[in-house]
Image (tube, rainbow, N blue to C red; front, top):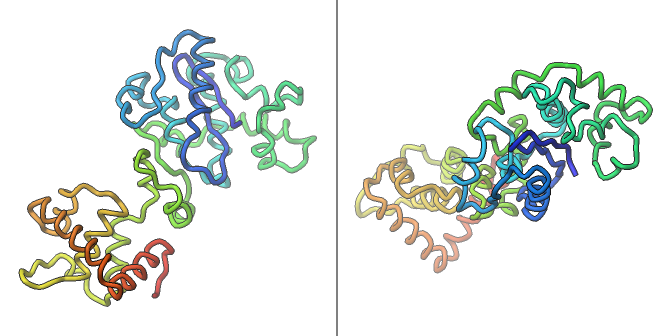
Length: 294
């Protein structure tokens, strides 16, 4: 279990997960129900994507609440995990709920400064080991760390209306996309789309494969099949699930039906033309693996 705290109707929780993208909804419901029963303040819980507006209306958009649990940002532990722990544990003080972090009943902060067995359920060693590998110095190092100010970067992240799906360096974000997109993409979790290669990456890869200038992808010539253009439209639609109108605007198509037609033609050709399928698979692998050459 990660670190967390509760402030009125706000639940602050940063779970520690190494290779899990989709949130564990059973854990979310169990934890939230326990808090609701104890505090009698949370009146409903929404975990499904169809009720996004319901859970967003619970609390101020800037709070780190149930929305953070559902969204489950992927965090670069080396760069941001310690900062997030400090942000969450200092939040009761910054919100005026307590004078000191250890005075707030609903925070896991006390588990980080105690060796009592009652805190054995709290997975704090991962964080404390980041401060120092010497167990006899960890609590002292943690207390010292907590006296420092929250970084401006972290404050800016949580001042935004919506939390990012990933928090880390560009290299880390690219690694997550390349490693997990195929396994973790889920139609019922819109934020999993953030793992997908962006449209520009898809376009650049197609141009590199076919050895063409990008202008060719956006040129419309009636009666002439433009394979790179059709592949680009198909991949942006199937990989990124972009709206038809958005794809149409990108490729100078005025009607969304034209995009649908291009996607369907490409799909049919993939089923019937083995040679084309082999070319398509090479492009697909280049995109997913981030290769610079075929």
